[in-house]
Image 1 (cartoon, rainbow, N blue to C red):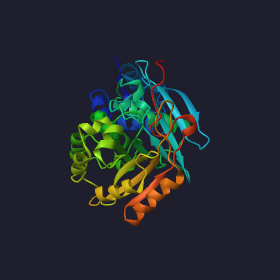
Image 2 (cartoon, rainbow, N blue to C red; image 1 turned 90 degrees about the horizontal axis):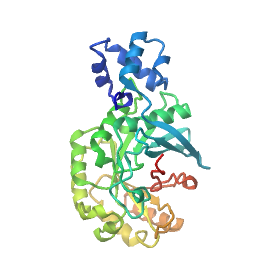
Image 3 (cartoon, rainbow, N blue to C red; image 1 turned 180 degrees about the vertical axis):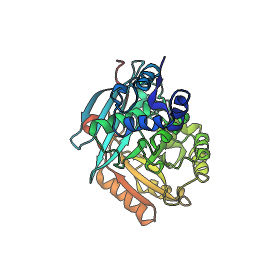
Image 4 (cartoon, one colour; image 1 turned 90 degrees about the vertical axis):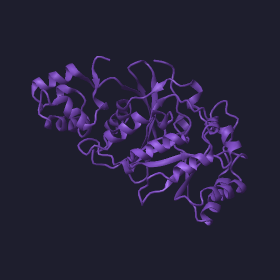
Length: 345
């Protein structure tokens, strides 16, 4: 790539890249055009001098990634398909919550190395990590498409395609760029990184102390079943994850979130619920129960509503904070575990 991708810069980095030729305050103006006005055409940044606009066009690009398709679910969720500069694609999802609240589910990789047996994303194999700018562009493009006001608070969850901690450097930089006050201004407290449990990377993430929310994809309460569902458990078993979580820096108002995928007749019984309570006994935790989302070729089935509600009630009775996450975007294959790269473009 001859030009630098403008969405991959923090404000400080961008100001430094300009300062030999232009005053640093110009960086703030450009960030306002990008992230407040959603304008990425340099020629339309009309309060910039002509020589600066020409400089931007020569040195930077805002079009390495393009939005090429979107599908809307009957529940209001929207799945977006993005094309990369090297002719791959990745998906992300806008979840429209009640009372005009939005959550953006971002991808961090094209494909995934983890290979969870219940997830469609890894079926096509792993292609590459997304750069920080490619992740930031998802937010820019979706907010622009939906005309979401720049001062409207939204939530970011790194729960799309890929394992975020397998791409920690780019994900952590994305968190910083999204949180820039002069830009998108999305507080780290509104950003959740979800991981399958790469224990050493959980430790590294903790050292960075970004102020984000951490979510653990647990899905089982014993190592045998978790290894069947998530082969990564062979390398990082449940206890190794729990150990790292116990040392993770956490905002006093927050809890570690545990994602628990409910699969019919596999991990949805009250015996599993009892083990889950014991496992999380000493952790400031919140459990999100997720219905398994079926896809072609999967041997697993979706449990009944009654089973899931009974599981939740047991956890609540034992003092463990628990919610059921209703699947969104099922009819457009936009729910958890259903995102994947389309055919190469």
